[in-house]
Amino acid sequence: MAIEVRIPTILRSYTGGAKTVDGSGDTIADLLTDLDSRHAGLKDRLITGEGSLHRFVNVYINDEDVRFLGALDAKLNDGDSVTILPAVAGGALAFAAAHALRG
Amino acid sequence: MARYESLLDACGNTPLVGLPRLSPSADVRLWAKLEDRNPTGSVKDRVALWMVKAAEESGRLRPGDTIIEPTSGNTGIALAMVAKLRGYRLVCVMPENVSAERTSILRMYGAEIIFSPAAGGSNRAVAVAKEIAAEHPDWVMLFQYGNEANARAHYESTGPEILRDLPTITHFVAGLGTTGTLMGVGRYLREKVEDVEIVAAEPRYGELVYGLRNLDEGYVPELYDATVLTRRFSVGTRDSVLRTRQLVEVEGMFVGFSTGAVLHAALAVAHQALKAGKRADVVFLVADGGWKYLSTGAYGGTLAEAESALEGQLWA
Image 1 (cartoon, rainbow over the protein chains, first blue to last red):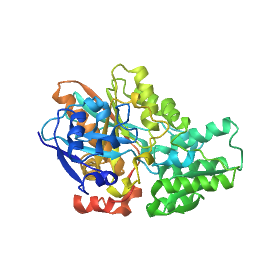
Image 2 (image 1 turned 90 degrees about the horizontal axis):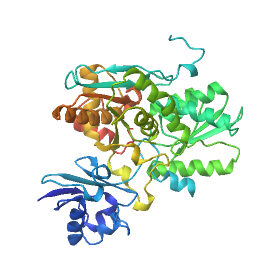
Image 3 (image 1 turned 45 degrees about the horizontal axis):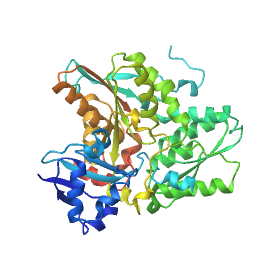
Image 4 (image 1 turned 90 degrees about the vertical axis):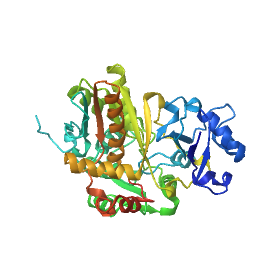
C-alpha cells in the first residue's frame, strides 16, 4: 500500500533531503513506524513521550487534519497523500508569536 | 434600518448572500457572509472595535494613548480606522514584504509603520514589536492572537447575525488565522444549533513560510481550542486561487485569496452532504475583498503563474 508523504524542510535531514517519501500502513501510527524504519529518528520528532502528536506538528490526510479523523489512529487508504507541516498560525504574523511575546 | 450615527456604528450586520450557481442542489446550499462590507473592508473591523472597547473598559487604554500591534494586514487597517476615530495613535510592525496597497492604506489612516526584515518572517515582526513595546511601557499591545475580545466579537455579533439570517444552518466554514472567527462563531452556533459542523480552512503557504529552525518554534494561537472545530482542512495555493477565480466568474464575488481557501473547504463539505443525501445550508465567511491583492498579479494569467506570484507571500 503506497502512501505519498510530504516532508517539511525542517525534517528533511531525516530523509536525505527528500521532499516526499513513500510509506505504508493502515493508520497514521503504522505509517510513521514504517517511515521510521527507513528514516530513523523521524517518528520521535513527531510524537511526544506520551504517545500523541507533537503540539506544533500538523499532519494531514488528503488535506484534512488528522486530529479530527482519529489522530494517530486515523485510517489510511492506498493512494492517500499525507502532508506533515509545522504549526504556523495563518493570517499573518503568527508563527512563534507567543514564543517571542513570552520571551 | 440602514442608518448609523457614525462609521463605527456601521460595523457588522453584513449581508448573507446565496450562491445559486455554485450550490450543488436545492437541498444543499452555499451562503457567503460578506465581511468585506465592513467599514474598512474586512472582518477585522469587528475585532479591532471589540479589542479597543475592551481595553477602554478595563482602563488599559486612555485617550491619546499609543497602540502598537504586529500586523501585516487587515487588523492593522481596521485598528488604524478605529484608532483615528477614537483618538489613539497607532504603530504597526510588519514584515517588509507585505503588499504595497496595505502600507498605503495604513499611512492614509495616519498609522505609523515600522518594518521588520522579510527574512525573519512574522516571528521577527512580533519580536520587534515586543522590543519596542518594552522600550515604551505606556504603549498598549492588543495582540489579537491571544485577546479574548477577538473571539468575543464573533460570539456577540457575527454568530448571532448568521443564525438570525439562516436558522437552518448546518455548517460554518471560515479561515483559520488567529482562530478568533471560528472560536467565536463556532461556540455561539454550537450552543444554539444541534449537530452544527464548524469547519476550518487553513491556508497552506509556500515552503519559505514554514522555514522554522525547529518544531519547538511553531505556534498555536492562545485563542485556539480544537474542541470547537469539527474538521480542519489545509488548502494549498493553487486550490485557493482556482476557487477565488471561480467565485468571481460564476457568482460575481471579488474576494481575497483566503476566501478561495474557505470556499474550497465549503464545497468539499457541501458535496459530501449531497453524496450522503443530506440537506445542508453551508455558510462560509468572506474575510475581505480582492482589492488589496491586485498587485500580486495572481488574478490574471495561468494558475501556475498565479501560484508562483503568491509563493513566499502571506496571502491570507
